[in-house]
Image (cartoon, rainbow, N blue to C red; front, side, top):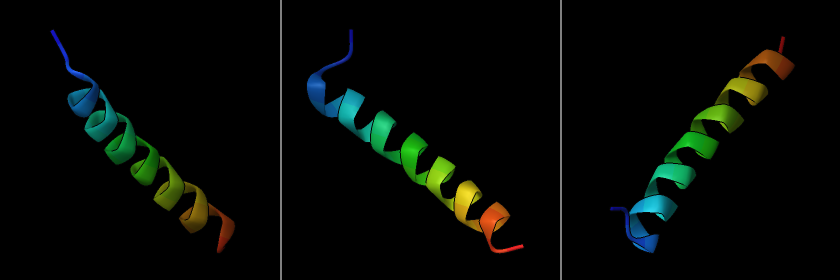
Length: 28
């Protein structure tokens, strides 16, 4: 089972990756 900390870490890393992808595609 995941604790709130684990979920926060997973969501944070995933959202940061998504944000980087969005920024990269926007900078074209």
